[in-house]
Length: 276
Image (cartoon, rainbow, N blue to C red):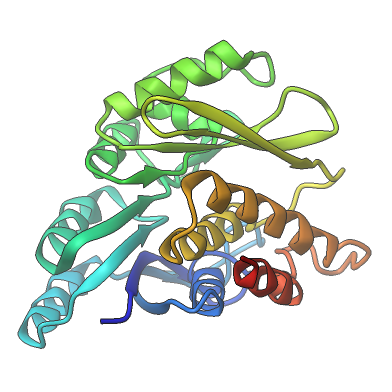
């Protein structure tokens, strides 16, 4: 039976993030990609205004229909979801997972030391419940701090702090951690990869820009690589490099501020996945 991944997260109709990234990127990796939108936005929230429709009410009905049709999944990748949806998502995973299904959780809730608007102070505790039992979680440093109840250190941290954080995240119940946005020198930005007993690092070129949607580009390409049998470290390496290629494809277009042109970098991703 071919692999089928279910991704559960919001869809911004315009903005090159969330499901509009996950569906094409994971599909380009050769993995059948099913979607369950947690909400629909007209465009993402970096725009001046947007519409928002919560889709929590339909999730149970969709699950019941899938069970009726005996639809199952070999992998799950979750992104931006609400606190009310987390118990339903756990139920979906529990009731539709194939044997040895892979669970990847991107605990989307914060960045640059701040929680995203709309999340209450108890949301990290709820997200920790979703992380419990995951094969891999993909927090940035801010999200890791919220999950662990730690003060955000800014850029004032060392390897000992990062590795202690990774161990503590696994203590929440995750089997492994890929911590994103790690940097020990100004010209490099990358990830810490912790498999429960060993921490390793991969650093890519740090470009002098910040662009929307790069976390979704990373998580989607990581999920696609991991589902293709790549190792935890190699999946993180490939995803980090794909983000850099996507940013490079966008540089120079001053009107394209709302996302990265990951579409231009998909041939690079496919080539890398095809390499032995």
